[in-house]
Length: 349
Image (cartoon, rainbow, N blue to C red; front, side, top):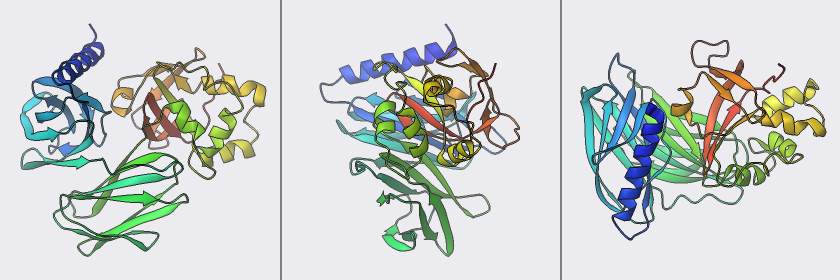
């Protein structure tokens, strides 16, 4: 049996066993991988109690959620193929709650586990929310949105919640006497998990992960004007492509961000409405491939039958690429993932 199929089977059997162990609603758990070992690829395996639930999770990715029975569990992470470089913590998970665990630090020194309970994180119908997690050894002060005070302080090892505006915004703060900031494009119905840490040189670094509890179809139908993917969502609405996605299916979409659609429209490359469905079918694969799984593929077969190449090495854009188009970031959804890409994929055969 292929390694990936065996891995998925282990997750399924493990989830069933844990959920059936108690009558309560299960908890949901995901892990963000920020741990490392000097001069060793920062790829880890993740074990909950005695079961491998994820393998080969690279830095700085977050896993999808898995369902776990409420109660006490031991979480262990280890550098892949080096089980001696490992760390563990005990989690107490409550029924029906969602948790993120950020694994941070160097295995030859100290690895810490920051557990985030996400109960308070409820995205508005049109807006987005953020969890800011402080992975530094000092408090984050003066957390702001567009220079307006948002949170007075986030203690070291703690986290805080923000509601994000419906327009482009700059989120910033201070770690000691060092300022950091990041410009965020508005999203609809998106939850941001934002980790603030210090690089080995002592500079603040921001790492963030996007997700939503909506399905792909629900997400694209909910996007408001000005939000990321608004341009492509308007074009997709002119087709029946979303209706063709099976309710019980899983999908990976590669969709141009707003700026890429603007460039393409200006160049008159977007086809007319009768051809849009075929165009978007070449941007969708019938698999759920978050970044740590996408890396295992040299090529993908899309809904229209085209085979598209992937490049994770040195590229002209300095990003991962699909058919030469830069893959910028991803949004995890209930039945798959959307990757923002910096152009329209050329499907000419």
